[in-house]
Amino acid sequence: MHARSQGKDRHIQGNQDAADKRAAEASVVSNYIVTVFLTSTNKLHPYILSGDMNESDSFPETNRYNTGYPIRRLVALPTGLQLTTPVNPITHTDLTESIRLPLDTRFDYVLPCNLLFSNIATSQVFRTDLLSPMPPNLNSIDSSNASDHLPVLMVFNNPYDKTFQLTSFARTNPGVALKWESVPGQPYRVQISSNLTTWSVLASNLVATNYSYTFTTNNVPGSMKFFRIYRGW
Image 1 (tube, rainbow, N blue to C red):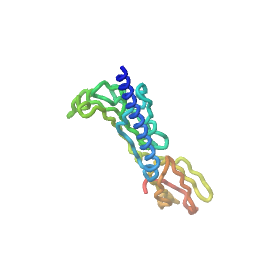
Image 2 (image 1 turned 120 degrees about the horizontal axis):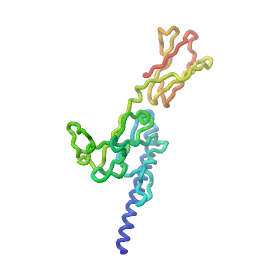
Image 3 (image 1 turned 90 degrees about the horizontal axis):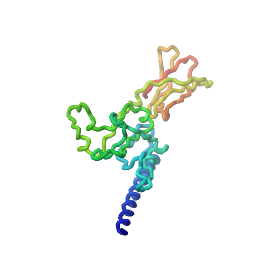
Image 4 (image 1 turned 180 degrees about the vertical axis):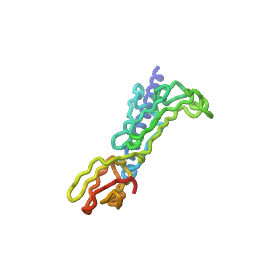
């Protein structure tokens, strides 16, 4: 009896050690994203973190260990990562592990940055065993044969291929302040004209760092009364 109790205690401790390790690993990844990855021009580009996280954020096994909530460490505000919840289109559940047994856990995550998060087109947890009719070149057992995890699929719209508009126009004697919708990392250029026919470049390579951009003109000739903004260099 004593030996059995010790064995159980060791099993519980092993679960706790694994949970502590997952939390520590998540903290290391988060710290790297914040202190290294996002300190360069990467912060202006789309980025994503995905994979098998080995723990469910919604249903952690707290009966066996004290969770360190690794997913929440990854989606902490400084990392810019967002939590998504793809579901199977037939069962409407987000469970991904294990397809070889009754599915009861979500271990697989797609964590996009805010730029991609705001441009999600579709997402799903994919299961071949539920497809009907079965598409060509697939079998119902493909999911379980390929892995004990189900794939998570996510499609994004191109964040740089969106219409935008001028949101404000104000005179700031002697200049003019122009504010428009922008995409981080996207360059813009401003052109001017006196007659809406002939245009010249006033400013170029205005790289946005947020979702709006404000440009204030300086020393624009009085004859120039029209402005327009283009995406691109």
